Length: 296
Image 1: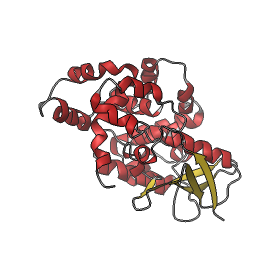
Image 2: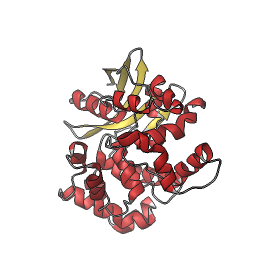
Image 3: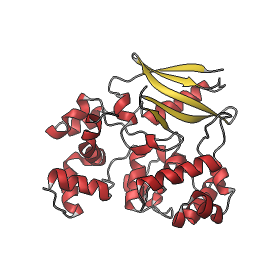
Image 4: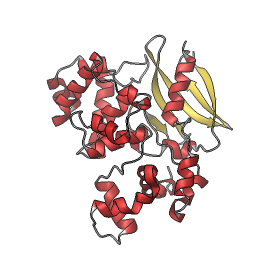
């Protein structure tokens, strides 16, 4: 039997700007209802380990979380929703920092700046690896294959994201032939085995005392994670020191700030240096403002 849970929206929170903040909403087990403007995700009831589908939408001053079934651990589901939507992120320091740039005044006005993420660092790790050296279409297909072929079913028509144990239970050939992830095949398997064994504990990075650079160095020890992938993951951990430059972001900068001409990354870094520890979030907001002018 379906059940409904509610969360109060923070004053500085925009549901629309958060779920559209980057492409994660387009990757299973997230799904977007563009007409109702609702975000669906297949959560896990921690008390039973059973997947349950939840649809998040706005209802007045609250967020409504409509679950496909009743769960014993409602508090756990609400914690996951808070984590996914970054409801506990403190945004005032970021807004104050970017107030020196007129181009970014819209961010505070629209209550933007929160970046959608998965309920676990594990899922964000795997999805980030799926974004490296390929098109977005291929990223979507790899994630779809992982979810549909290795994720547990909610008993209806959706699957949860696969656990480390599920991903460690298959071999490299499975990844190549079924997931279609090419050179990443041994990387996925090694990552899953290390997390399953406890050798690697990515969830601890959320509260790590390491400096951002030291934490970045730890992430880069994972096969397949260079500067781009590690800085992308760091943003989802709440650390925005890096610019996470890729071909798309560079091209946007050239068009916006350099008269369509290519330039060295050093110039991009100098442009955003004034934002200090927030520069990675500042460049992302600067380059994506037009997304929210488009019909969704």
